[in-house]
Length: 349
Ligand SMILES: Nc1nc2c(ncn2[C@@H]2O[C@H](COP(=O)(O)OP(=O)(O)OP(=O)(O)O)[C@@H](O)[C@H]2O)c(=O)[nH]1
Ligand SMILES: C[S@@+](CC[C@H](N)C(=O)[O-])C[C@H]1O[C@@H](n2cnc3c(N)ncnc32)[C@H](O)[C@@H]1O
Ligand code: SF4
Ligand code: SF4
Image 1 (cartoon, rainbow, N blue to C red):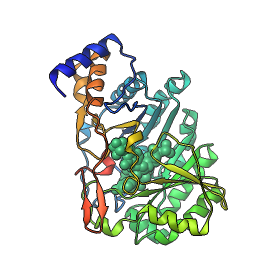
Image 2: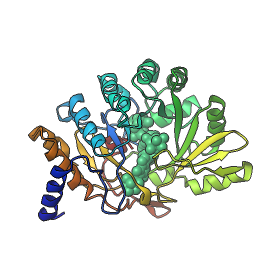
Image 3: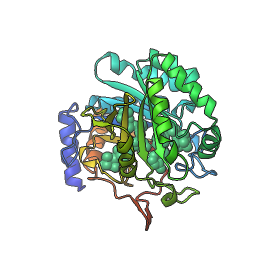
Image 4: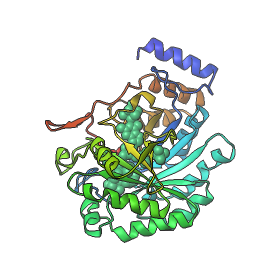
C-alpha cells in the first residue's frame, strides 16, 4: 500500500473509528481467530514436526494485550471470536481471558466467543468456559482407534480427549468435531467417526490437509481429497445440502440416515476464499490477513508504542487494505506447494 493511501486510511479511521473493516474485494471482516499460544501438548503429524521449536515466551502477548487487540476488532465489526493455538487450553490464564472477553457477549457487541481445542484439557475447563458465555467448541478428533490416535498426535491419548468431549457436552457446550482426512490413516474410519458424532449429538467437519510448514511426513501421501470422500458417502447415504453457515469456511450437509450435520472444509478441491470474512492474530501480535499467504502486520509494535485507539484503528485499516484475494496452496500427484513456511499452529488454523 502506498504511504498516501495509508495516510488517507489513517485520517479516515481517526474520523470514524467504529467504521467496519472491509477489504479491497468488498469482504467485511467479521471473524477474528486468535492464537493465544503456539505451544501444544500434541505433535500431530500433519501440523508439526516432532522436534518443533516454539516462540520464546518473552515475545508472546500478555493476556491484557490480547484483550486489547481483540476488543479493537470487536469495536470495528468483529462478531465472532475464536481462540485457538497451538492448544489454547495450555495457555496459563486462559480462563481469565475468556471471562474478560465474555463482556462483549453481554454487551451485545459480539455474537459468538468460541474455541478450537484438541480436547486434552477440556474436562477441567468446560464448566468455566460455559460460565463465561462460550456455547460451542470445536474439538479435533481424527480417529477412534487408540493406537492410531497415538500415532497421529504422537503425544496424545485418546481416552483423555473422549473424556474432554463428554465433559464439554455435560457442561452444556455444543461440540463440533474436526477430522483431518488422511489417506493412509483414517480414510476407512470416516463413517465410524460420523456414527460416533451422530450418537453423541455432535456436528462433524472433515478437513483437507493443507500444506503449511515443514513436517516429517510427505503431504502428498497424507492428502485425501474431500471431493472423493463426498462421492463415496453419496453412494451410501443421502446428503442434503444445508444453507446453514457458521461464519467459518465449512459447507454443510445433513446426513439423513444418521441425523448428522456434516461439514466439508475444502480449500484445495473447492476454494471458498470469495466469501472470506476472517483474519488471524498470532500469539505474538502479528496479524495474518490470509491463512495461505505470508503477509502480516505487526500489531504488537503498534500497541506497545501507543495507547491511542485512533492509531490502532489506522493500523487495522492499513492491514485489511492488504488482504489478498485468496491462497495459492496446492497438493496433487506432482507434489505439494506450500504457500507459506509457517506452521498451522502459529495462526491456529
Ligand atoms: N483455507 C482455510 N482454512 C480455514 C480457514 N478458516 C478455518 N480453516 C480451517 O478449518 C479447519 C477448522 O477450523 P476451526 O477452528 O474448527 O474453525 P471453523 O471451521 O471456522 O469453525 P466453525 O465456526 O465451527 O465453522 C482448520 O483446519 C482451519 O485451518 C480459512 O480461512 N481458510
Ligand atoms: C492448528 S489446530 C489448533 C487448535 C487445537 N490445537 C486443535 O488441534 O484443535 C486447529 C485445527 O487445524 C487443523 N490442522 C492442523 N494442521 C492442519 C493442516 N496442515 N491442514 C489442515 N488442517 C490442519 C487441526 O486438525 C485443528 O482442527
Ligand atoms: S493440530 Fe492442534 S493439537 Fe495437533 S499439533 Fe497442531 S496445534 Fe497441536
Ligand atoms: S485461504 Fe485466505 S482468503 Fe481463503 S478463506 Fe482462508 S483466509 Fe480467507
